[in-house]
Length: 229
Image (cartoon, rainbow, N blue to C red; front, side):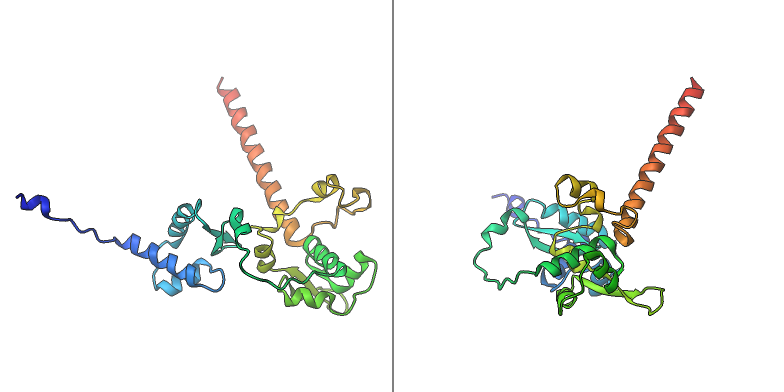
């Protein structure tokens, strides 16, 4: 008998594997999505957690649960294509009123926006509890005061709003052209100078700047090649 062949080699997880398991456990047990700093604080480690998160994201990509990132916060979610099987749980559903839906839509596309501005856009005064129910759902929140007489409170959407509607960022929402082509709004009656202001407009503006810079780079590169020829 060959004793060497009977020996089994024991492999112990390296430090990176151990950290990955710890991050996985922390996210699984968390009651809410966690940002990288919160994960580091729980680990008591200064390791580059972002690489571990990307590794776990790839690992769970085709599993029953996925690791997703929304607004720089990470959490495990049931895979979107398997949600239909989660019918054993019972939920108490409550439909939003038409006024609440309109109010939410206005805040989404015009934030930051005040109560009076919402009423002006809707053309009617607030009904009791319309804005309050959106605040209770934590889909909108106060965000400072507008620098005008009276200093009215401004309202914006929250990360919970993005998470509920499975959005990475506000600019993932349909823009004015897409809403028009779908027949949801009349472009002729929309003031494009104020539509999609605030954070939503800033994201679109940043994307346009990136496109402009890339075009300039292409132009300069082409020009230099022409000179060399």
